Structures are given as C-alpha cells and as structure tokens.
Image (cartoon, rainbow, N blue to C red; front, side, top):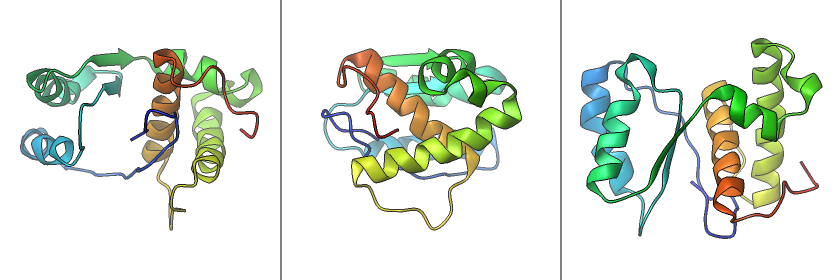
Length: 138
C-alpha cells in the first residue's frame, strides 16, 4: 500500500492456498485499508484476479491490471530484466530500496512476490501521478 505522497506504507505476502480461501480472504484484506483505495493487479490468469477486482469494484475503487513486461520496463533497467529470473532477483534489490526510501518497516524476509508487488505499486504511483519520476535513490 502506498499513500498519496507516493511512499510505501505497508506490504506483506499472503498465500491463501486456494481460490476458495482467496475469495473469502479478499474482503478482510481490503477492509483493512482506511479510506478510498485503488487496486492494481499483475496478470489476471487462473482466476486469481477476479475476487480482487470484484471486491474493489463493489467498493467503487478504480482497478487496473498490468502485465509484468509493462511495469518492469518502467521500474527496472534493461540489464535487470534480461530474463524472468534476473527480473525477480533485481525486483528484490529495488523493492528493498523502495522500503528504505519510504521509511517503511524493514522486512525480516522478503518473498519475491511481495518484492514484485511493491514495484507494481510503485509503477501505479507513477501512473497515477503521485510521483513525477522514480526517486533517484532507487
């Protein structure tokens, strides 16, 4: 989650284990967000995006789905995204810089899915105009 200044305020990784548990869990996750939100999701295959999009839409939140190639092109340098493996490794490094730059709590561990979610959020912050450009510290 990012605030209106474009800084990361919270992040986490949750594995619901099944679509059924995901459908039940989405409400609780989004209910933990105070105020109006905006939802950005990577991909959309396999039925994983639909529960998120449905609940966000029910709340009247704008929703965006983005492909990994799109956000990686904006956030990661070409040498960082030569392969999917390289992009995931560099996502971890850049996400940790975002955490530091934002003043968010440091992770005890950072799963690659959480690191990528942080960067998808940063892409969204740029798309929304909350930041004019990537912070130079990244």
